[in-house]
Amino acid sequence: MSNEIQNLKPLEVWRIFDQMLAIPRPSNHEEQIQEWAVNFGKNLGLETIKDEAGNIIIRKHATPGMENCKGVILQGHLDMVPQKNSDKKHDFTADPIEAFVDGDWVTANGTTLGADNGIGVSSALAVLASNNLKHGPVEVLLTATEETGMDGANGLKPGVLQGDILINTDSEDEGELYVGCAGGEDVNVLFNYEEEEIPAGFMAFNLNISGMKGGHSGIDIPLQRGNAIKVFFRILHAAQEKLGARLVSIDGGSLRNAIPREAFGTVAVSEASTGDFVALVDELAETVKRELSATEPDLKVEVKEAGLPSAIMDEKMQKNLTLAVLACPNGVIRMSDSMEGLVETSSNLAIVKSDTKAKTVSAACLMRSSVDSAKEELGSRIKAVFELAGALVSFSGKYPGWKPNMDSPILKTMQEVYNKKFGKIPEIKAIHAGLECGILGGKYPHWDMISFGPTIRFPHSPDEKVNIKTVQKFWDFLVATLENIPKK
Ligand SMILES: [Zn+2]
Image (cartoon, rainbow, N blue to C red; front, side, top):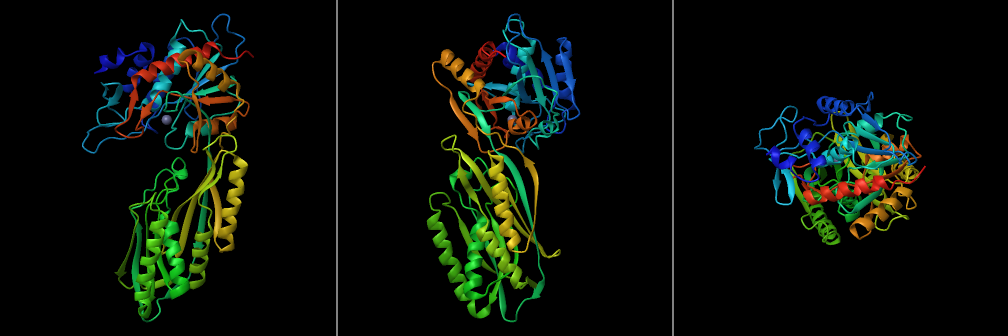
């Protein structure tokens, strides 16, 4: 199998990638691949550093006549996402990846391939190993643990790298240049409530919202999908206003970075109004389904009689919670001024969950923006809503965004180089999700940054594959870019 990979073109990239396939590198088990990368640099006689965060930095001097070029940092992450099919026996901390050629693609047998970001890393190392390329001063920065928290990027110290231009290799569509990404921050909300006895003559119902699409809270946020928590509380709000419905418990959403697909709750109403309650739920369910018919065709609202619980939440807190959830900013907040079609700022009301033992309801929003100050402003709005409702609000997990700079010199250079080589202008894109560039640029604010890569499909899944032809194009583009780096 291995021969097949080794003989693909460009040889200098695939041969390094083939070595990487044999070395375990799931996130948080990166000691072996880091050691391999350190040896790679040292064996070439190049200055090689491993920092405290596990990042590897390797320096190579300019080739003759190129000393006056600006310094370039070629960056990729060394870890990979360990995903396999359920019937596949594979130990990501020990077994090599079984890669093979499948038509125009390289893929792996039942596991992730690690082309994300192994091809980018291999290309950066191939530049170090080459003796026939023309380039200015080059530093290769191989970051640790990108896939589970960008630990390496977060731990990188300012002042270590000497270059002025950062070229990130972690994008997944050949022919596209990425020039921006979103930063993020979590909002954490906590309500405390008093238990009340369930009033005499009340009955309980499970109110379940399901069948929604969900999706990535950044990339999928412009698709205007529904939010199951918002749907639940819209129905609860109507039922509490009209019929005095009471909330027993709520379990909506699960992950901060996923649009909530489901919300399960228990609601109590007086026996006399159960018929009206069911009718009201049905009516509102129809209304919401009509509104979301294009984006949520499988939305399901179910109401079913449940066993009588021992307690309900106090009325004041229930009202505060309901109103706050209704008012909480959610979805696309603002589109970008610098790039058409790009979401600048968004909020995902991701989780609302009661703990009947602790008598609390917690909620979480994930905010994203390519403009850090816009994210801060959104944070104060969300905080205001929940504080007015008597909840405790805190922030955590903040990382900076990367605001698109359409006047970036490396962008101009790479557009010209691509056009000359391939006869068209590459598409310029930004992503409404986190990239390492956001964090790295926070440490080195003077950097001119760009991100590109070969075409990779289904990353982070056992179907991951990389298009062979685009690896050649990606390499040729990288080589030509290095030849044309602006002067200092
Ligand atoms: Zn990646």
